[in-house]
Amino acid sequence: MGGVIRLELTKSGKRREVPLNEESYAELVGLGPQESGRVFEYESVRKAYEKAVRSAKLDDVNFHTLRHTFASWAIMRGVSLKELQELLGHGSLTMTMRYAHLAPERLR
Image (cartoon, rainbow, N blue to C red; front, top):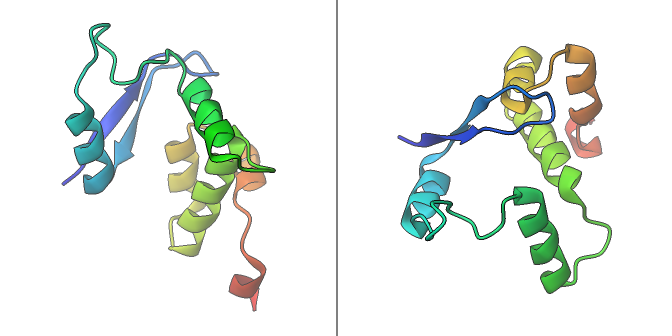
């Protein structure tokens, strides 16, 4: 069984919890807190992600690439739009639909 990560500062200003699968949860727990009490050295996950993208020299990849990929894969695995809305923390299904693109081969 996995766990959850609690997001204290979100774009909507609402605190929320995001479920993690077993592997992700184990990796985060294995990192342990730093002296600051945080798991990551950066205050922002986005800054850590952007540093990793630069280090890996990836082109045409940004922070929202993660959200779009997650949403598309979730829909392709049978997650409902309402469930995806909750997972992404969206206030409306309209916003969720912007993220829920299907791969062309899935539509075939």
